[in-house]
Length: 497
Ligand code: GLC
Image (cartoon, rainbow, N blue to C red; front, top):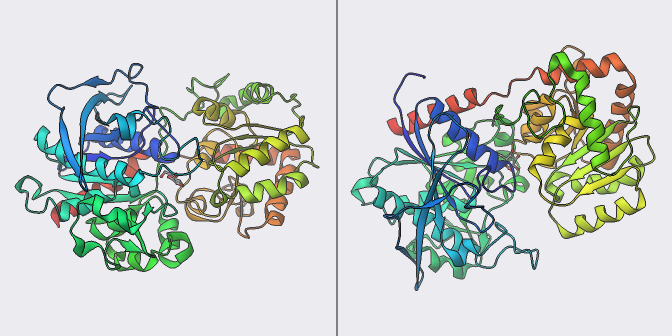
């Protein structure tokens, strides 16, 4: 256990692996608290209890004294209770509180988007105001007062705003500091100005200097302004959002105003979950010494997707939310050209309806070369990482990106665009045999992407070069310990401030 002061940290998040996940936030929300606990800190987590969470499987139980809470959403009085459980399969206890309200969370199978319309739920403002207010009511009832409240993304960005306003004279919060990590500045949590009154904040904050941005109420802006420290998930992405308005939903000026309190701590990988030597979701485990076993996974993967296996044909994979900013437009536009090559492509993901249709069409058009699973399937993601030869990740923006790191560790060579965390983790082939672990390209165009695939195809034919690059990737660390220590440094500076 590391020395130094131990902090009480309340980690607030809208998704948490393995309970409920739509993206990397869920992974980080489990692995960072776990690592902090291993360093001796007392960490507890708060997350909504969505209908999608299996209460029975995860042994989530009622807590007698955590019932009958009430908060006001504008004129409306809303009741909630809190259930509890622990992060599974870890040595140190990390308690989880599930904020439970049937109407706003329990009834919803999906987290943010209404599956009936494909649009965000129209009451997301109320849902996440309730969540953020609920956090304070919970702390008061528990009498467990955190040194640090660590929130994440727009869904929890009102927490620092409430602390500095509604709860500012509350004795018990006198020493509590806030840090908000933004995992993606693309999502601001925008709502009509009329939503402001639901926050319970004073009208003085209903202005462009405060919570309004481009004529809308913007939850993320509240987090940027009111958090003691703010953070994002790679140094590269931090620099990009400070300089490029398009990447920060136009909030770059506000971010620049907080520059000295704005950090970029890169995510790590939870090696208890993502490790080809021990992974339970793959067909055959492997490590550096037994790389040849990777090919049992390749065969199984290809067949699972209904394609026929041929070792001479490289398998490229895509694991992504299907949105333009992930570069899915490039993939969709390049596919007809890529299909002319001797390759197979498998895709796992869900997202925009137009992409679901496009990829569905492609499976019909290229039945022996392209296959997809249009949905969310974490177990399958493990097999894809283990069985593919290359991963395509041509994101327009990528705050950190986890799949490229999983790929590297699983001997799958990533082909990425030069942006954010991808730049910080993938080293282009041009760096030479001793360090290169992937392909990195800059220009956001189908031409550039297709060129990289062609380069990858040549590498695939060069057996030694291919093996060397795989090995360089598999030697990566991506340890959470280092990143968790950086977070502790931030908590320390916050406490001293
Ligand atoms: C978001 C970002 C992704 C990052 C993840 C975890 O999903 O888009 O780049 O890896 O959060 O921080």
